[in-house]
Length: 233
Length: 253
Image (cartoon, rainbow over all chains, first blue to last red):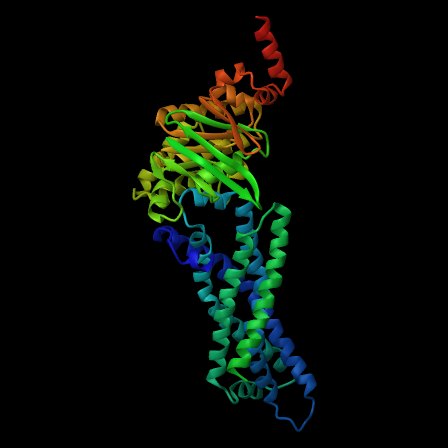
């Protein structure tokens, strides 16, 4: 499937429109849920850290430090990707699956259009913008942590900001973006595969979306483990 | 003209079509008929290259349909129009955009010329005031017309129709059949139609091949099919009470 996706390209004028459409559907359309989830997750991480380290001997900037580390290394890239596997992955599987059962993919093939390239390539390209979404999630996650810890009285603004600057390693950001790109590829391809090769009718489209979510999230978790082992261990 | 020589296709070692040979003639409506499960759709999908054949060969105007030869296949596919059983219209596009789709994909015309051409074929299939509607907002008969318009917008040399009047009322079915017949003659194209509808057979069957369990057992015209002595064909043709009565009336006369 991957091989065919990158061969026999669709006319550029058409492909360009498809890519912008996919950016709108997959990236812009996900900003709301990503913002909502990241902000609240950041807040919860900060509160739980504050409650867990209720010891006057521990430095006050620890809440900011722990929030930054949790959000940047794990919550923004991995948890948001699992949420995206549900939102974007199901959308991709069900839209391609519906095209399969209603013979729209056959219609493309008969017209001489490479349906792999026409349907999957724009999704892969649009998800190249996925790191921007994760950057946004990181920012809002830390902001959520700041608001929760400062306004709930767990930390001062100075301590929290000092914490998020403490022991900052650029490699952690590189590590996050490496796995984000891998997750983006998984988010575009596994749901497309399940939609493209499904058989049956409307009920099977639902089942395919379900299976696609399970596989996508499982692969994300496995990749997360392998990349972490390789780059951070 | 499309020629098929002894083509076979199996699924899990069960032969779905078995050494079928036939010639589908230009400017005529060529019908593939048979009961459900007789191999009609598989044969059509093999002709279109949507399924790989196990043996035999398919020739489009003498050129071998070779799936591995990408340039031949690409050129050939641009000359093929297809009307699917369920119309297979792109449901996220309006009627006009569905018809414009092949033009946008393969034509270098300007936008205004493409729209003019699309409107020409919309008029040809007798559609009015549906340009900006989505497929789900129009009737089944109209969807078929849109599918036909999309299939002919690039002036194809070959037109394939998979059960074009399934799900339509008898009157609309006849209108669609006649439209396909008219377009076949007007554009001088090779039309291949899959059907099990005897009304279609009688209405537009210039040439008919009859399949039973994946084998071609008869070939002829719509006049010949009425007078054949073949028991299997008679069982198929006269399976409806209406046709039985027609035959009895003919015999009495």
